Each structure stands twice: as structure tokens, then as C-alpha cells.
Length: 326
Ligand code: PBG
Image: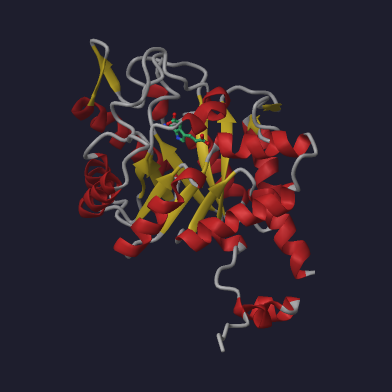
């Protein structure tokens, strides 16, 4: 007689399912991306990302207090400066908008893990992540500015710097620059595996960072490549990265899983702007159960092997996890 296994035995009650659950989303895993705009009076909504705002400094302070009360432990900051120039000088200004936001966040909650996105695209008029010469994004001249930016964040009190520019050698240059200045304890979360993705669309409206010409395909990765992700990750580890990121999250779960199998470093994944906006648009139309969909997505990131999740859903997820605990 053919036998079969009774998989349903362990699914019979909620408590049994809880008992055998393999992966859990926890409040500690979440990093909330926030946009801080220089000179903004209060806060202003980002149309393509319902529920996400750009914050002026005072409003940002108030939001940090609210989020801290909700149990949020980490944020990653993006800046929108008043002025842009070819050298991206507001990216590394001592009184730049991100630098001021770091100080404000640490003043409100010294325990909060303040991460910063290290990039140039929001700070120069061409909107590219590196320096442009004759219509080309040049690698090596970009490294100085990127390292300077990371250093200015560390000097303002950032707990983690996260370079997202995708120039080669930036992790090594940042590490060296931080160490020389006495910031050897500031970790680098490298956007090691960042694809040239259409899923960044709403972010570019949010951060005012769309490229003025061309695209980012000469520095961000081809979405068709997975082996290349291992090479990028390997190189960043050799250069001194403390944590690796895969970005975007949903369409690249296989890449997260491969990195998890191959490397022992903590792995983050970035649930990016269009992934968020698609959920919000469908939910606004009543087509999906937002809470169930978002929690399922978060669980899938953990199952793929991510330790850390950067997500615009973080405040909602915190609230839902709290409700589930009762
Ligand atoms: C900056 C940067 C981008 C994102 C994070 N850092 C945009 C880009 O590379 O074009 C995207 C984040 C998101 O879509 O939520 N280089």
C-alpha cells in the first residue's frame, strides 16, 4: 500500500504552526528610510509614495520621537539639499542637511542606529552617483568625494555609513578615510549588489535625484546577472565591508539566498520605492489585504536569508507586530 506523509498534522492549530515556524520578522530587523529636505518648513508628502514624506529638520525631530516610541531602532537618511553643484559639495558639508539630521536624531534618541546613504546623485545637477567628465561617469575621481561624504557623516555622529554609488573601490577608500580620522568603529553597510532597476522610480521623485542624461547602467548591475553579484560581494568583503546589501528586494530574493549561502556577513535587503508604491496603489483600490501582503513580503526576505530589512513599511510593520503580540 502506498504510504504518504501527514504534513497537515503540524498545521492543525495556530500554536502548532507557531511552534514549527522557521522564520520570523522582528522589530529589531527593520531600518526605516527617511528623506530630509534642507529649508523645508514642515513636511511634504511624496505623491508617488503614499504615507512617505520629506521632512524639514523640526518635523524630522518630532517624527524621530514618534518612531522611537513605536519601537523603531534604526533609520537610514537621505538628503535633499537646497543647492546642487558639480562637486556635490552639499553632500559633505559640515552643516549639510544629512549631517544636521544625524545630530538631531542622535539628540532625540542616542540609542537609535542612524545609518546614512552615501551617494552623490542628490547633490549634483546631473543626478549621477559619481563625477561626470565629458558625459561619462568617472570612477576614480568619484572616490574622494564619496569618502569625504562618508567621513562627514561619521563626524556628525552616524552609526553606520552605507555607500550606494556603485563606484569600484569605494568601500576600501571609505574604510581607509574613516580609519585615518579615528572612526575605525563606524561600520560600512555596502550596497554591494545594487541592480540598475526600474523599481527606483518613485525614489527619484522623492529624492529629486533622477539622472539628467542617460541611465545608471554603466555602474549599477544588470538585472540578468546573479554570478556577478557574488563577485561584487566578494570584492566588498575584501575591501572591508561589515555588512552587505542586496537591492531591490522582491525581484532579487534568489540573489539574497545565494549571498546567504556563500558569505557569513550580515545581509540586508532594500525593499525599494516602487515595491512600496505598488502595494500602496493596490491597497488604495481595495485589491489586496495590505497588512497580510506586507507581512508575507517581510517574511520572504527573512526566508531568503536577509538579517536586515530596509523598508518604507517599517512603522506599519512595527505596529502590526505589536498588535500580534497582543
Ligand atoms: C541613491 C539611491 C537610490 C536608491 C537608494 N539610494 C536611487 C538610485 O540608485 O537611483 C533607491 C531607493 C528606493 O528606490 O527606494 N543612489
